[in-house]
Image (cartoon, rainbow, N blue to C red; front, side, top):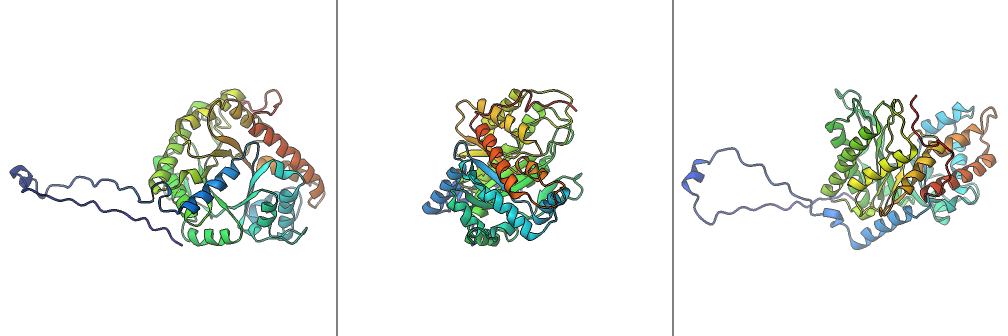
Length: 394
């Protein structure tokens, strides 16, 4: 099913004859046309039942104290992680590994959702033969999918990129929903250079996110939008605040202009941090407050929550910073939680080094312990070690 935006025409009439000065202006350049808002403004093109389901999924993802396990790495990416610890990459090992992430005893106490790679969406549990989306639903965890394709470097733009995959997205979303997914996640990677991101890169990526969200909702998938600003660089915390406000403001404006149903969508942002090479020290509390400052300035109250990505941070730092964000939240209305991949998974894979095979039982126990830490941080109740979460200059 494809979305049709009904555009209303502006009709102009002239009930009286034009004046002489007006006649003299005939042939002059016409004034710019008024911008027309889609008739589907804030999901008006969706049925009441469609909107209710999207809002319900967004609420399920935003349950307090629970977050998202992001296991949507493609076969090559997860295979590279396997090989780095001496484990051969195969479809069966990928399947068994994801099964451990979904069936670890007690993981459902800390997880609201899981993001799957399309390959995983069609794989089955060896425990009972059920497809993984059903396994997740049975545990109260909402299954979702990554529908985007590959990053593409814009020619002549100094390495700035866009994410590919809008073509045929509607058909893929329909297939993924039929397979059991109920939300999707699209990542748009950005990088701060010389203290800024170009307007071209911001507008191209944020408008792509808005179009993706619009298409997802029409196909019955709650969209998670992920503007991902890299930690690469030496920019300071104030620059990070300024640029993230600019990027997120463009995103929400584009979503509204496209007619996205805001109550039926979710944000997956990077944490507001100084660049890894920043020479200035910042405390964990300062970083936590910076994240609240950005959200307070631009994040719509209509959206129920934000699930921060880890972005290459260690579990200790990611948890300490998420905890600081929630301690600084005050009366902000959103659920602020996690959607982590590397922060959770890299320590698990370390258990396999030198053993040549996945250590699934040990990994399962450590994984649940990690989720307990992430859950506590999402509630602002994590007792972080001294200095954890601080930015320390290299």
